[in-house]
Image (cartoon, rainbow, N blue to C red; front, side, top):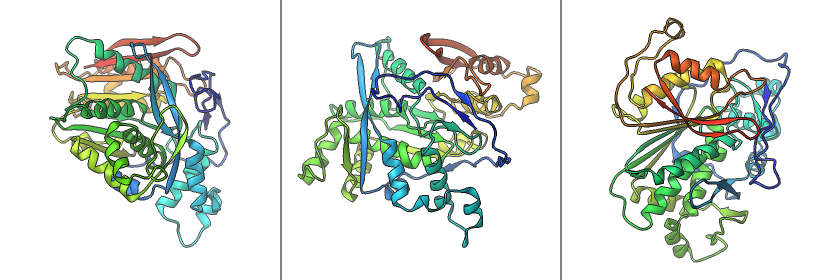
Length: 393
């Protein structure tokens, strides 16, 4: 188990990002080999149905290099997610031995919730194959937003409408929240003419349930497209006016859920959520014979064992080949041919993940062996070094 200290959750001022290096914890003697979770789609309707009747949120202020200087998005409070699980009785037996001995066998959903509650108490910890840190908002996800925002100044910028977007290892989903924010802002001034798809993947289904989906809902509620819902309810206790810079609470009603889904449909925005390992993620099951125009991932290269599965999935997702390379292919430098295709593939990461073993050098070496080109498009040198890289095949 590893502990990462470079998070922004514990800072009193959310504008300040703590960049301490991580501490490695001694391996627990009870650790055993784990079977990786298989790919599965988690329907949004299913996650909406298990939301509590009230969620609390706080503003996330993201410094931007563009003329806007700062962007504010909303994210669910971690303590609120923890309270939800406790209030549902999830914490009655979180000890592994208790779980294994319980009769009758507990449901897979309850087991996931109990694991999530365990990690909400120490959400910076990584347990490979069990929990991959998605309950936290990490620095590099903000870097992705900053870079995506600078693209507005690029000649020929078309925006995100009509694009197929995939965020891998999404966690709290900040880059996807930004894209949704931009889409909803554009739709509020003119009708969408093209369908846009936003797909988010995280290893842990509980992460999608507790933070990813609530954050997407909050992003919609903070947009002008939620005005019709507020007007139809006409009750500030049930459908409150929102100040995006002030922490508050949002009542979750059946009417709110229906308005959210209806608004996405009218805006021609399709959001899908997926859980499970990268090894089992098949883009043919999510995007068909098409490919993703935009692929985003941040803070996902800390484990050297997962680099090749990640690179294989990235390559397949942007339509640059469906045949996965194995470690023998990489070791023998058996490389695919370069192709020309229009896509944006961005990876944001720290230069080195101390105590874990991964980092940008190992990632670049893996990419080199599969004939990929890498360009650093954004770099941070204060504290632990960070880079946002564009990958091309």
